[in-house]
Image (cartoon, rainbow, N blue to C red):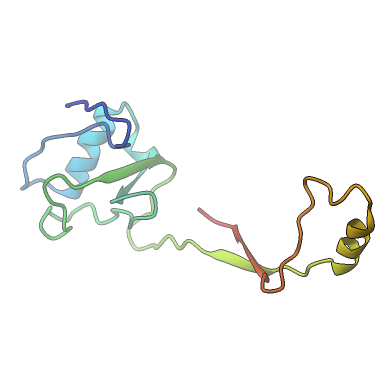
Length: 131
């Protein structure tokens, strides 16, 4: 395993493996080099929001794994074959409290430093519910 030390690149580890191997063999080799149990890590293509590598029996060509590809690995329970992991967000409507703004603006000291001033066009905030 070659180590690269750059401040810009979060991908500091690499592995060289025969291109005729399966996705499962790649996962096992990476997990072994990271001292991780393959049942406790999730492999994603390209980054934190990339698609999870689930189909272990595929060869590299079919799985579209190519030379110098980045694989993002995080701790967690991998998705089982036949299941899909769906990420979603709940859009919450933001209803500004215009009365408290009017009262705060009357204060001779001005608005408190942490006061969140509502905007005319602001109506949605996002909360992540599921990873």
